[in-house]
Amino acid sequence: MEALVWTGSRLEAVDDLEVRDPLPGEVTVRVDAAGLCHSDLKPVDGDIAQAVPVVLGHEAAGVVVDRGAGVDLPIGQKVVLSVLRNCGHCAACLAGLPTLCRGTTESPPTVFTRYGAPVAQFVRVGAFARHTVVGQQQVVPVPDGIPDTVAALLGCAVVTGFGAVWERARLRAGESALIIGAGGIGLNVVQAAKVAGASRVVVCDTNPRKEAIARRLGATEFLVVGGADDVVATAASVSPEGFDAVLECVGRADLLTAAVGALAWGGRAVMVGLPPADTTVTFGMRQLFQDKALLGCRMGSVDPHRFIPDLARRYLAGEIVIDPLVTTVVPLTEAEDLVARLRSGDLDRGVFDLAGRSPR
Image 1 (cartoon, one colour):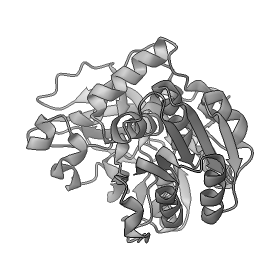
Image 2: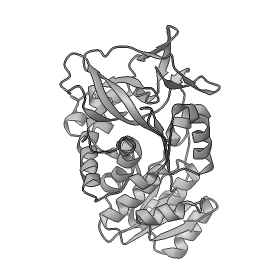
Image 3: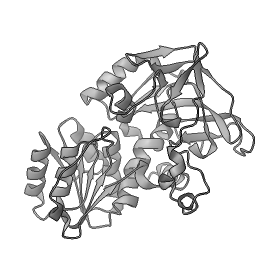
């Protein structure tokens, strides 16, 4: 079958990858659309230790086509994929906090082979393949009426961005928000802050091209900055008393330090971007003295089985928009070009079409 494999030296579109049948508690998903996230490039850049060759990809949607024993999901069910392969029975899972489940740290054997040799499955998903096998807890049913490209984004960019604002920062109506980084996740943070009723939604980015889409999604101000020091100075110039919530959506230590420096008393800084392994951050401890908080955030800190269906409902009701985030849709064979465009800042979200439909 078709897939995109990182060999350790290049991205290779192949047509001879094999996937095993689902075991008890697992499902086979036919992947129809998969978004290209900056996190997918972390193994390529050496920021995440990863066995190779590997099928990358984690933000995707498709249809259940096979299931193992004990799975009650119907064949033909449209689903969004999730990286959370939580156990379902620990205290965290029973409390509806799957991102705190320690079982998610256990990596099962890969489901892929090529020429009889194993091919790794990135973050337990491996979405850049026409078919993948995942745990039943990794699929979230969604209505058939949601376009594949939109459904794919629900699995990472949208759920992470909205969860970071609503669940982790707990932004309240009338509060102010500063978003550092207007990438795929950052733009969802912008919309989430708007929907939450923020009085000001200020966005910082180095790329002026992002202003139009940021304002369309709810930014009240857009600041073009040159670096972390510029973020602090510029933020202070527009809000001298700081912001109630600052969300760092890039994954850089200096920007997280800037986020802490831009907080108002009682403010919450949320680390949304994924930094390289072993990244360290330094800031003055007394910067947190006035009841400020620095918070980590994994996949929006939400239960995807509760949160994603609610986002799907809001999308279908017209309460949130996702379609404008999809800059382009291409086949796997155009991966190198899509990656280059992502790195250049030319994309809000690029999506791979694995269903063979005409790219738009």
